[in-house]
Length: 212
Image 1 (tube, one colour):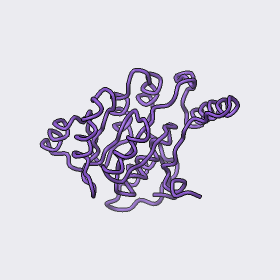
Image 2 (cartoon, helix red, strand yellow):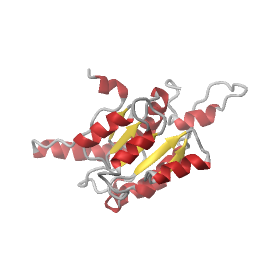
Image 3 (cartoon, helix red, strand yellow):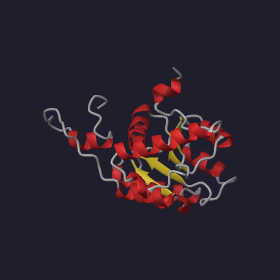
Image 4 (tube, one colour):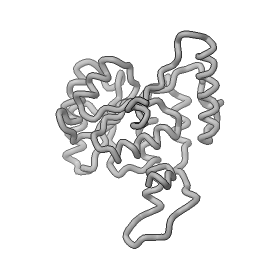
């Protein structure tokens, strides 16, 4: 199996060689939406899903974001630094970028500056994700042309809301779905641990208790 199969960032390209494969893909989209509690009528399965690039060097943070993106059946690729992100953008069209700020090789601010030389804020929205919630950090993000700002550790509802606010109008059905998506309610919790917010942590991992 490829490394991507284990990272959770495997590509989800629409099959293009046969009508039968395309039909199977659309059926899979509907089944996935149904299994995650979404109403398939809200999304035109003839349209492609918005493709997301997640730029994050921390494995745990990457896992948490992927759990939430996969929960709503969004195709996502990963890069571990700004240089990898620019290479990915050069090869593949993306509709939204989730960008960590502090990374080796090339940080998020430098990467976004390079992106804005080719794409406007409307053409390719870039959302900052950082543990630094200071006003100066937000200002720096705005100065390089980032569209939004999410503080880590993030809340699922905030992640979905900021993504919905910045996706293009061609994804109206997906925007509605993200805004309607409720926070996952874990059905099983281990014994309480003093000083550990178990329920909140499980929310961020979409109730994935073994992974938590």
